[in-house]
Length: 519
Image 1 (cartoon, rainbow, N blue to C red):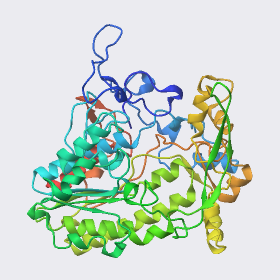
Image 2: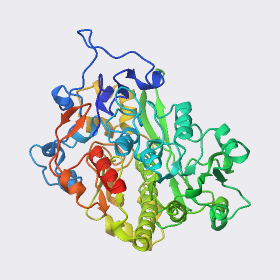
Image 3: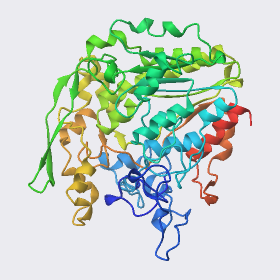
């Protein structure tokens, strides 16, 4: 769930990127006046649901179902009427983003879309990684996408806007995580000056800076850190992609459902616009390409190796450690409505979790360790009953890349519909508007046995987040999560109503803190 401050965005898509100081991209942390209401007084947080005039997006199980896998999401696709109160468009309004969702996990404090490590007044809030390091433990982040992209950055930075490059770089410099690994691209990385100081400047005695190099094989990439120990004040930054690769990739290597890195549908859509720049429609323009440049694969460790090295290094800290590890390509693939990429990325997270569980088994078990596996948000994907059969047959036939239709476009249908003013057109439902910007055929949907968005929106009629709850797997939690299910929580000192059978991100933060510090 997210907080909604100010007016909702057009089309009620994502929650607005507002704090109580206004639109967050327009200023640095705290550098704006407080928003005031019609009475001239500063706005006050209202814990009620946004549909009741409050500031919170709360869950309605009648409209959205008790569980993410509620049968109503696929009933319509199989010709069965949905329940009377079920609304397939309910979860498409006021979606959270990765930044403020991960920030709630990392700090236990609710904030707005695009905000990380700050509260709704843009004041910095300490993260669980910072608390770990303050107490003598090690703290690490790692991702398959840029190091300071939303989820990992939420554990090491304090910024009202997730794209504010200098605030991201300043936050990393102040936090100095013990371990940081991912791609280094654009503003989503430690600054060039900071990296240079790790090579031959003030941080050289503390940090070992590793980066992708065509002369270094993947199996030898981490050789320079094998004798280093965080108890001696040593830290590691590992950069891949971007300027350190010939391809300039934003992501670590991601595979397809067949576990190869070759042969995928490179989904591209040509957006047709009129003379006023209004979107008229989208035309598929797909080609066959590779998931990652074949010639670079030999230089980049796979995500399993990366997390194994992170665990090996961080666990040398006698006081313990905290590690946030992400396979961010799951999100990027879902934005693209690309099932081949999505399942390939899921195979990566499966390998990563397996590596963590083996580490725990060999290092004190769940009496000394805790594991939480979850996500930042949902993407409105529905699998049809014959999906397993379709996927199995494509794998057997060597055509698994076809689990993503050739007609896919890697576009966001509702964004395009909003740009065309469709959110103001009540002559059609939102689902009907979405279909005008989707490109999968009815045959495509049946051939791949899945669809994104509500049934009737065209198969790839979404490409975005939803407000549907997500699942959490936990081990070593010692009953903490179970004790908080359905309980209220607090935002800015006010009680927000909990949801039956569910916990909020801020409550998971409390459980992680309890496990890490024995509270």
